[in-house]
Length: 121
Image (cartoon, rainbow, N blue to C red):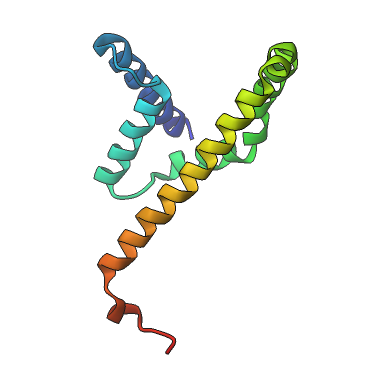
């Protein structure tokens, strides 16, 4: 289990170092997750210690939303003043995400070929 924490924190630390030293325009946790993904792909499986740690963290994931909720309450006046802009940004980004995901899925399915899955006709 300690090894799982070391892996997670090590990827986070390396991501932080890369972002700061190379002045990358990405959040360091994202770089750390990409490094973790690459490492897992090279290793070929999830080590047992990492699996146990990840399952424990996922079980308590809802606790990570508490700071965001507090931030909403603290900045309520700012949000209240710009609620329309925020709502439009959320709506437009959600619609774009759904449309782009549908287009990608359509392209990926068309590459499989129709004969592979058969038809209901």
